[in-house]
Amino acid sequence: MTELATPPRPTRREFRNINAFTDLRTYRLPAAGIVSILHRVSGVLMFLLLPFIIWMFDTSVSSEISFARFKAAFNSGLGFVPGWFIKLVALALIWAYLHHIVAGLRHLWMDVSHAAVSKEFGKSSAVATLVISIALTVILGAKLFGLY
Image (cartoon, rainbow, N blue to C red):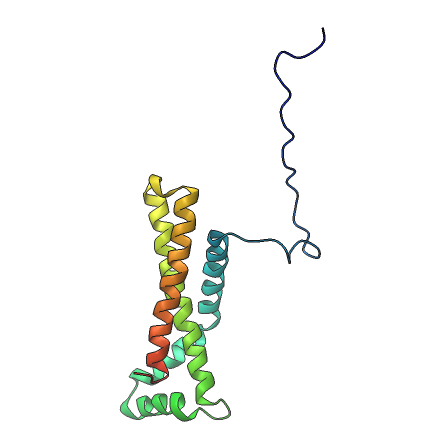
């Protein structure tokens, strides 16, 4: 007589905090989480490379002589820094700008459109963000390294 009228509920999954030492290797972050972390990383990278950006802008627009020095830095290096390293730093900066802009547009679209706030749209827009930013970086990197 003490039985419940409704059947008992099935046990729910237990959600727990992630231990960085034991669970981090097996934890699979969703694409939206990866884009969110990379959005922050690209913002920090742009901030840290701000002196390099200012140097590039200053030497490229000051005079014809400084522009020639600017081009020579990318080709043959600048002092003890080889030219390929300067190109890699510029490529990292190109990726940071492109990823930050594309991810920022994704966030703006999700803020404006209420239909865009769903799990499916989050995954598809995150994958699109990664593909677009990496594809544009490859295209501009090929131009930077003189492939076309």
